Length: 288
Ligand SMILES: Nc1ncnc2c1ncn2[C@@H]1O[C@H](COP(=O)(O)OP(=O)(O)OP(=O)(O)O)[C@@H](O)[C@H]1O
Ligand SMILES: [Mg+2]
Image (cartoon, rainbow, N blue to C red; front, side, top):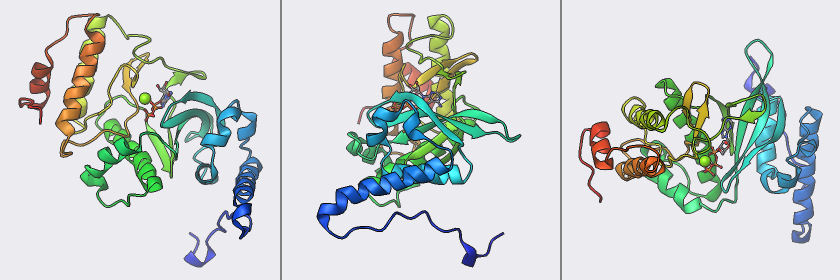
């Protein structure tokens, strides 16, 4: 173990210019500097077909987070883009497994300039697990990333299918890649794992297990945030998931049930949402 006095040198930016006119150029050179540092580690973001989004997604903070994850050997390469959403982009990445073989991972990078910042605050500020965080924009995004990591861990520990989370740094989450080769599994809206009735039952089972075993409510459940893998349905996109103590937890749960019923309504027989809620929670749902 190294002593506290022999800490590794920090990756620092090149010297900053003082004039405000130079700030833009200064930021560009810091980005270039980090990009170069990453290249030295064999990470070539500019080579990937992510080029068109690099300017927006790979800002200075993100590059630094990426650099830390590479330095810590959490990831070994960054590949192509899997998805570009409003709040986050998902990329394929390389990672070493326990025997040193390179395997696929997914990295989810939360945009620091997100459009849904107010919604994020609502989910985080009502969650007692995150009551101590500062409320600046960046801090909320970092907490959001950490929240997705801990929600995925909790879901996994309860034995419910979701990507295994590997690590997080600032606005980047590294998790198990769910797919075959380089292709992600389809979303449930694109493929059902069996007959509609079977898929419906499986989805309701996931909501029930998540609540009863992991003590979580997904909060943004839909046919977009469930993937269909070879062994069945898999929950994804869990940053907004809350524990039952959240003041709006039951409203979120009821909304999740309604969303799922809406998706299956014209595919198979569905159960009344109040009945499902009662069955899962053991109490009646009252709109407050
Ligand atoms: N671990 C993963 N493995 C493979 N593909 C993934 C993984 N996580 C996400 N994806 C793909 O990326 C898409 C977007 O991911 P996700 O739903 O987590 O982000 P998002 O909807 O953009 O996030 P948000 O709604 O918070 O902005 C998914 O629908 C899925 O196709
Ligand atoms: Mg999503």
